[in-house]
Image 1 (cartoon, rainbow, N blue to C red):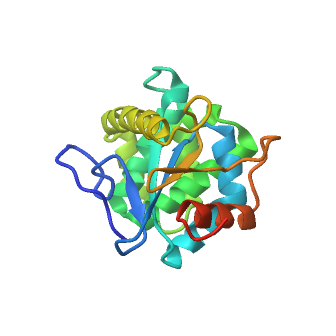
Image 2 (spheres, rainbow, N blue to C red):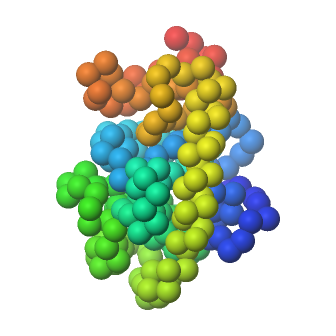
Image 3 (cartoon, one colour):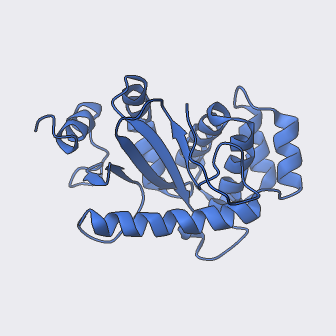
Length: 214
């Protein structure tokens, strides 16, 4: 596992360039843009999250997570930003902890909606059920709002990166989440009726973007 590097501070130990990276090596990078408030992001994680991780484990690509907060529409205390601040606290503990809490938050979002993610108590409850986290440290970070400034900065930076990457890839429509790009090439995630593609279809899309076949 590796992390991006940046001089920005204060930031979580494993997300210093507004991104957390899973996977080793120097191969292609699959950049995943998401917002914890986004229902489509929650659906995507449910359907394709394990496949994305498995391909990273196989060395097909390194997986770079970029979490935005634009769905809060400037509300610094909103669900997107509050969840991202919690992810910052988890990322301070390690990549595995970030990934575990991210998956748990998206599972909560899928089952319960996004409003509760603005509440510190809800985020702590989610974290308490997430293996591998130092719950006392995370609770202290949330109580002190330690990573909210980073969440605001990182969320905005991720949105800016999404827009520029979307434009460079000449993807259709308006930039939105979730979105993935393999070394800058847009990879389709949804069917025409807004359902996540199947794991096989996603894998084929990755191969096509990598120039390994249709």
